[in-house]
Amino acid sequence: MTVNQIAEQEPFTTADGSTIRSILDRTNAPVEAQSLAEATLPPGGATERHYHKVSEEFYFILEGNGTMELSGKTKQVGPGDAILIPKGEWHQITADGEHKLRLLCCCAPPYSHEDTYFS
Image 1 (cartoon, rainbow, N blue to C red):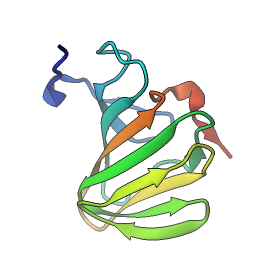
Image 2: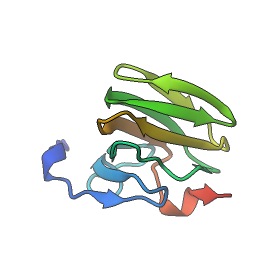
Image 3: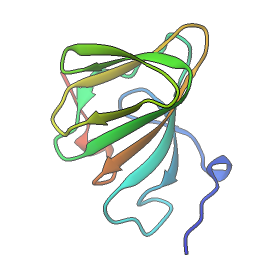
Image 4: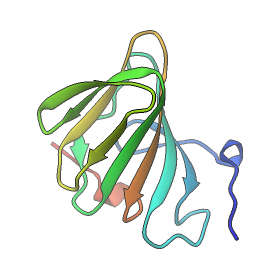
């Protein structure tokens, strides 16, 4: 049985510029097909617009408000919103307002820097 505590995971910056705490992935568990991480963006911060050739992603907003851009379409998002990001879709999320944006990010197959592509 693998049980990881988020507070014990060291944060790192991903290729897209967000700060990540890996909850379950290949670096800290015997994961094969997915990964789960907490991502945070400071107020006004944004990920760099990118896509993944292999991984499909889910974002689940925990706190803060933001603007999600997916292949040129934008939508305001906030706590409780779940976002599907199909593989190959350009995307970017921006933290709106005066508060940080905190979200869960699930990738299948697991996230890798090598599967992050920029314009």
